[in-house]
Image 1: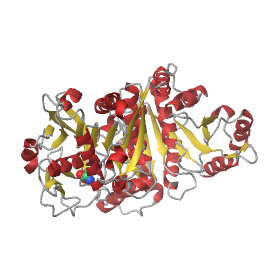
Image 2: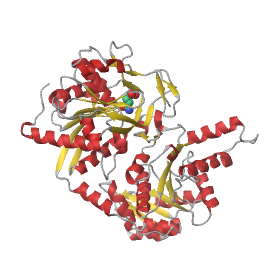
Image 3: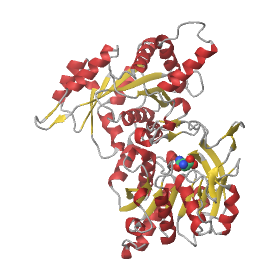
Image 4: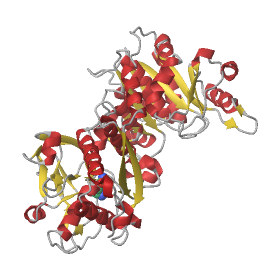
Length: 558
Ligand code: GLN
């Protein structure tokens, strides 16, 4: 029977609830259990797909095409179970479903209310996420509830899990609450009061925490732990310290050493072999013992918020570890780049990356960066928008298609080398229509798709004959220009199996050592264990470029 761990947060947000949940899941998985994680988000958007990265950080995409909270990225990087549409839902999605049922008449004339209709719906979604009633049912589902206790928005979720725990009966669920202890420098003390309050707030809703994960900038002394235990009604061994660390991969061991996984297994009456932490220890060793450093310029728009490129940052770091290198990423605002300063701005990097993005702002700077990388033979990786930018740049400056552009940025461009395709077949064979005025939610090419990779290409060396990666974009390389681009020397190295859409472009290796643009988002599939073949190859190319140019490395004049 599936057991549940409900993870809630108190005091403030951004304490690392996602990492804590993922770490617990990893510990349980290492004990041989089948585990999944489910994220509940209290906001009213149906999913984060239409939210700005400034609001919500990265939108993570699953194989089955769900646009989800970035915590699902942590989940996939920490555990083996792959996330699906059913692993993340919001208040908006719950209400959407309740309202559909109401319109269909499923409630048989009853007054539809938060309790029980919304809370029941939440419980059904949780059960679906845990795979209950299917072959995918897990041993333990860890349910992370977004927001902080005390928010009006998250109340129905907390009420739903309280009811669920009651319904499941004893030893079937556990509550973990993440709290915060501020260090007051003038007093020289860690303060326990906010934690006392948040545990009390939780009790007022009817939830008694079994574990308090106490975030602080330092380890919490036993005296304070005893005090918290007394006031919060959590046994002392359940008061666990979670201090700041320099790498998130240290968190599983930190929690294990204080007995978190043992405590949860006891509470849920689960008998397993002990947790295995060798792979985590090896990982931390690798993080702490790099032999080289590579400097990568990430030329993007959302540079002030590194959460916008969470998976990408992680993928680059994973690839670094595979090459025993520390990857130093410098974010460069593409709006500040122009032909006059590009050499000075990008000249000292080992590689250039243009990540995904939406909208016109900063596009010309990205085109400039792609041109610089091509002409100066600096390794270039263009992801999604970064591939489109590379294609536009090549069209303009090599294929002679003056003012080539994407119709996303210039609807009347004379050469729409990137454009919307207006009709489109989905995985289930249904035809989707897309136009510039379509609803923003739900008009994208989303999720996993396969394409054939052409023999003899760099992409083929990296991926082999087939590439399967995840997508999240609206525009495509315009098939009407492919021949012209090919004649001008651009290699189209992968096309989708179904629609023959461009998936990978590259430059021949005799022209440029490493220049690749991909229409998909490879970063979503990188794990700390294996890295990712494309990023691994990119970081190796950056190291090779560094070795080849280290003697005469200085900013290049434009
Ligand atoms: N804006 C581009 C499109 O919609 C690229 C999207 C992206 O980079 N994820 O096609």
